[in-house]
Image (cartoon, rainbow, N blue to C red; front, top):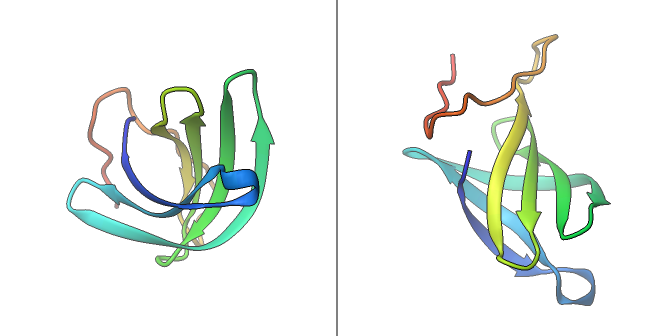
Length: 90
């Protein structure tokens, strides 16, 4: 799912998420928990101000962002966003 992300320059100037929008919801990043690299992208695990965990993927060449996973705080399961452009939060 493509998302709109506000960034700040991190280590070596690489963009890091500061906040992002999911539909009408605005999520502020309160903590960056982990980061790992692929050939031309990075995965960044963050905690939102709503207490939920998110894994974002940024394509470093094109600077496009995707939500690849989220976990609701207090839930035991992990959710993968549907292929459509909308994510429903219950």
